[in-house]
Length: 211
Image 1 (cartoon, one colour):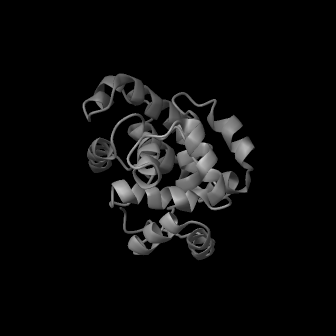
Image 2 (image 1 turned 45 degrees about the horizontal axis):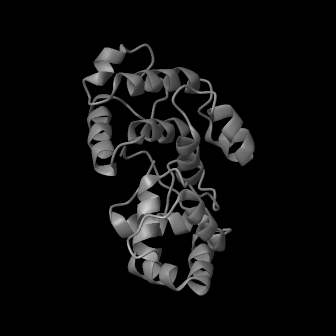
């Protein structure tokens, strides 16, 4: 990460951990085990959404490998970094042609739309309606953006296979629940479903998850 890029942390995190620990015994164990860190943001929408695109439908490890290659060759904090590139060139970093096109499209869109304060003040539904129009940005990516870039406190993504796997591991004796089952279980974590998701992810991959 650039030395000039600073992380910030949500002011609701401690309240979330305390309340989740009180209402859910399993969550209490996870929070105690992984109390060494918490979710953060670098307040750069382009960076976050680019990582979301790279991370779509592949493992965290594979996404990290591709992202690290991109980061060595491009200033991924600059929303214009992929503008006008040839998708074939971007493919050489380990991306699919489709994701290459998505990153170029995002770069072009974000040149005039990368104000963090602008996105921060919008309601969730307004953010969804804007981002869903961008090529390659779907419900999963939008939820990751809400969680990791804007640090909204009550987001849950049943589209995330890792999260569903983590719920199965911790709540269903290793059996993978159906999406509706996971969504119903997650209701007990409101209004702190973002924090609950964070600890569940860490239970299957102790490395910090970030988008």
